[in-house]
Structures are given as C-alpha cells and as structure tokens.
Image (tube, rainbow, N blue to C red; front, side):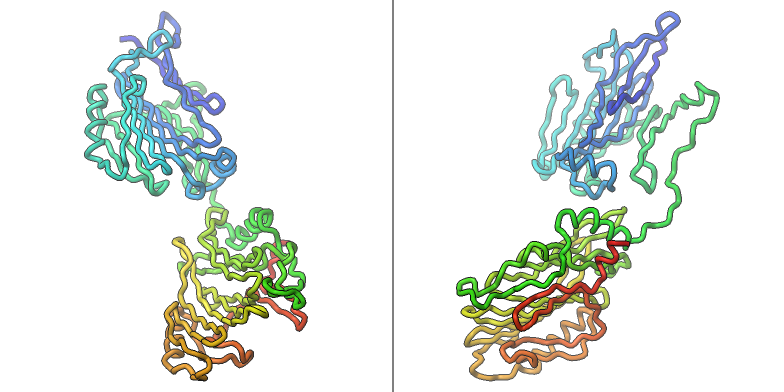
Length: 481
C-alpha cells in the first residue's frame, strides 16, 4: 500500500532510473537500476515502462569498435553508413519492492535478459538473470527461434512478467544481425528515446507529462523534421570530393610528364613512374549509372600505374563507395585510356603496348554500370597480339585465335557477336570492325563505332612520349564554386 516514485534523469552520457519510497511526508531514495552508459562508440535507444509493480527497462545498443570513427559517424551519418560490430538487446524487469535501502535485493523475483550478436565472432550470447551468472552461448547459424524463445518465456513467467510475444529474428538494421525482442502486455510507458522521422535526430518522450504537472503549461509537441528542399546530388557529390576524397587521394595537377625514357634499358623497358603531382582525382561525373533514376558519383583516379574508376551512391547528404574498376599498367606496359558515358553506361577504351624488348599490343572496350550490389560489366571486347599470334575476345570468350603469319581476316560472325554485345548493353553501335587497326598496323582487335558519347577523360602524348591527363568534366571549376 506504499506509494513509490520513479524518476528518470540524464546525467552527462548516463541514463539513471531511480526508485523513491514515501517515508512520512517525503520521498527517500531506495535504489536505482544499473546505469546505462552512452559512449562515443555506443548508440542506445532505451525505453522505461511500468507493469503493475514491475519496473521495466528495455534497451537496444549498436556498438562500433573504433571510437574515433564512431564519434564522426554515429551521430552525424545515417545508421546504414557506419559499420556495426555488435548489436545488443536487453530487458530488465524488477519489482519495486526489490529496491531496499538504496540497494537491489537479489532474489528470483526479477529477470535480466541480455542478448548480443557479434559480427566477427558470429556467436549469439545470452545472459539470464545476469547477476546470478546464468549465461548461454549460442551458434546463430544453428540456433532457431524455437530453441531460444521457450527459455526466455520460462524466465519471464517465473518473474511474473506478462508479455504478448518473444521474438528472436533477423534485425532489419543492421542487416545480417539477429536480435531478441520482448513485447509486454498492459505496460505503461514512462519514458523513451525516439527518433525524429526523416532526420538523424532523437528526442526524449516523457509519457508522464511531468513538465505540464510542474508548470501548468503544455510541453512542446513532438519535434518533426522541418520541410526542406532535397539536397542537390551534385552539391553533395562535389562537397564529398572536396572534403573527403581530395584530403585522402589528392587532386591531379594534369601536368605533362615524361612517360617513357627510350634511352633506358630493359628490364624496365623505359617507362618512368608517374610523378606524385599527377596522382589523385582527375575527373568526376554525377549521373544515373544504375538505371534507377537516382544519380551516382563516378571519380577517375590515378594511383601509381593504375587508373581507377570509383563509383559511389549519393544519399543522406554523403557518398558511399559501391566498387571500383581498374585499368592496370606497369613498368613495362604503356596504356592510353579513354573514359566516356552514353545512356548512363560508362565506357572504358584503351590500347596497351609493351615497350621495346617486351613487344605485345592490345586493346579493350568495356561497358560498365553500377548498382548497390557492385560494378557490372555489360560488354567486354578485347584483342591481343604477341609475336606469332593474335586473338579476339567477346565477353571473355575467345572468338578467334591463330597465328598472325596466316594473315587471315576475322570471320563476320565475330563482328556480329560484338555488335550484339554492344546492343545488349544499350549502346546503339553504328558499326564494328574486327581485325587490324586503321591507325596502327601493329594492333589487332575489335573496334566499335559509338556515337553520342560524352567524354570524361583521356590521355594525349607527343612524339617524345610526354603524356598529359585530360579532364573534360570541368571538375576543378565545380570544386571552386
């Protein structure tokens, strides 16, 4: 028949739930639930409820291993951006009579269920009545809901907790994790942390209307996201390049450099390492590369002997990498790449030449698209010549392979196969030529004619092997805006 009072308060990054008992004409602290901490690498979403004389604390924790990364991402970025290492769910129910003399009375009239899923370890860990050391380790790949739920229900019933359901299931976010949820019957909510719809913000919801009782005034309504215009994907992408990528990768100065020193001897075959100032981001474009109506970001980056095409999604005011496609070179192989776009497809074309003493020649035409699942190769045409033989390939399948001394022209079905490949990729080819190059009598390959391309990047060189990267996207002007 004695009234108790429950007070919920925040102290720094701690959540404190205290129980007071009426003694005479005042209330005296009898005890508190174990403190819940919110750290820079620990995100939590607690809720406090009353069920008759049971005080219930339910909580969900999302834990990230790296505190410095969590500090930047956990509270500023959407929760599907950062990597979570562990997902914890907890349920604690204690009878108010178990709070005595500022201590918790240890008996079997309460329940504490703590469930965690570890990404790396792949082991579900469940603790029942944690103060009593009742711990169970489960294999999430072998443990079914019917094996876990009865155990939890038994503990709930023993503690006198009324519940609607106990669910052991795959979490919606983060994907791949499992969680344990307990839904109570006739529970009176006291306090919760709620997410503001459409934002990364949270607010405290007091179901007891304490502010109104103390001041006679109505508390502020639940906050909602202020209507704002959707951020321009172009603005998001170029801000991401300026603030995130350039500090990591650098911005290529597009200066001419000597790529081949013909006076150098083998085995280097004369090629020089590209100077550091030319390394980094060369070009960038924002376009729908996935065909879903939502634009993605493509960057062309010089990294040593490679030219990389990095694709990113643009969402929630940031960019997230989807995948990368690399054009490989080396000390002994010189490449001349060109990157363009048509119909939302990225076209990669390049010729390669092994330098003196390593003679071979090749060319390639690749069409790419990007989805959340990664980079898709829609069409790949290539030709290769080494002393004594030549070959042509369509989508990795050898269409022609013979000695170049035979001087045999490729069959028309090779051009037809290449034409079909290009049409399936949605590139609307005008024509396809297979055989010896018109521009270089040493090169043998498949040469499609595609009209309406928008060029992003290529290289030019002079007779003295001075090479220059060319950006056609106006990246530097856009970054200056």
